[in-house]
Length: 416
Ligand SMILES: Cc1ncc(COP(=O)(O)O)c(C=O)c1O
Image (cartoon, rainbow, N blue to C red):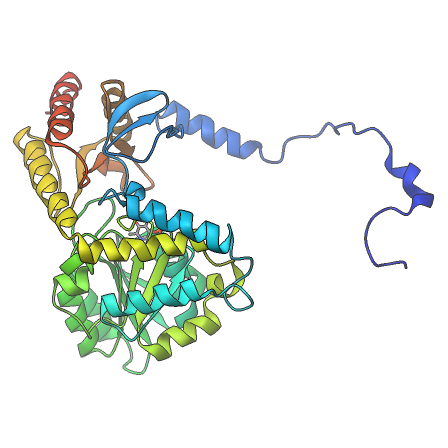
């Protein structure tokens, strides 16, 4: 029957057997290669390092064995025996994929169980899980705001928040980093009837400092704004058993929207949003990544459930993370490096110039330490850095080795 598909009918098949010959034309994507060439000239071009082992405290990247200070595997859960076993068992029982988006056939009882367990863990009414922390942030902000609303956002908030704000088409008012008074001044000038969302990262991913959540919360309450925190780097790290910054600051019941990630300390993949039942049910109906992208494979969900068990049953892992953090941070400060205002296991070594940060990272790698160089546009042009993240599974010897290499390479490059 004509029109049923777009394949050639046998009668016309001959017309499609012409040999493929590329047409000579100017490359319309050439501007992209020009931009890459410019990055190379500035020393800012980044090769992807390839991991050839487990994501461990010691790992093999690009055929080289290194102390790994670049992963977000804060608690070492990516390789925890209970998580591995949970993933394998889920594959055996339920197969490799979920086969559908959540709103059609892709909601498995495992997904529901994880959401129930996360809600109890976070002391909230309800939770919805997204495919990633990025999808959770962007999907949530874009769902709850419209072009008539206003977002009041910390200048260093994560890209996924910024993208969510842009997608919502709400007006975006940015306040200087951690400056709750500036946020308050913005709120004060807005019409009382206008819908407002105050949003901050719980832990800032490039600086490792904490957002000014208590003061922002108070301002949001005073002006009737929605309060939202992105706890991607606080999940599993801050608060009792890793419940996040709301628990850390004792703000239960005062933050309307909490985003957490399952991709970092939790050791698997995903993001979740925690809040009231009405809010979460609204996201079921309006958050586009929830509606239009396939849900987690059962292995990922089962892994997250096992990770929650570990957080509750083995809190000593979190204690070890903090002992290692204190040791390594003090080591870097004692060596005279500028580590900014970090309060978490993320410690930057700020060098200023982008090319110098990349050079420091490359030389450290040659010496057996992987600490990623980070430059503009991820951080401001004059704030390029090497970022370090310690984990619970680093040994003292590994951390001391890394400090010794930082000392030597820093001296060689005139950074300290
Ligand atoms: C502050 C922050 N929010 C959200 C995300 C996104 O989380 P995910 O990796 O789970 O998509 C990240 C990850 O880099 C992050 O650093």
